[in-house]
Image (tube, rainbow, N blue to C red):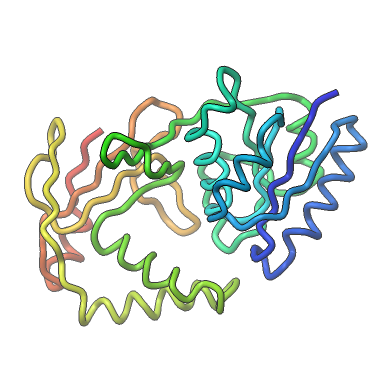
Length: 248
């Protein structure tokens, strides 16, 4: 009998994660899939790795951050070699970009059916290496500069905001940065976009909830897109962002 683990972020969806996990567990049981539920915060890496060990299918129940945390736990542990578990996603977060980017179902019944069918899709994963060790992984994109600063500023207040309030916080912090952000000099070395830039993003996916980060990005092509913008001033950045150099 197939073994599945539901990794539930209790903070996702204003507490809806555990409710949706119960619904999914019922659907999986109906399809003869044995299910365990682990309620854990995404940043609790050690407990996450321990919970995942032994599962054939691991379904992240939360937002994009929870999905990324599950991928990080699996990819940075040797305990799952040589056969790593398959990762699934039950979206209960605010953005849930992965649903659109990877063309995944969102209803518990459909997620369970996909797990039972064993249908999989291989996607690329980005690795952030520091001092020779993998410090982080990303499934969607990674930013350096203004993008990273915006996410960091909002993350400091995440515990106080959910849903539309969290989206409003992004807008609020973005407006603040329009007046006080100081662009660093980011040195990039790649096949084409080599030099000093004001902001850099590495995209594995193109589609976001609203718009795209890179029209050419394909999460299954073995490549990532590098979007590097030249201006290092607030006045020049909007135009530079539209004309950012891209290197696959």
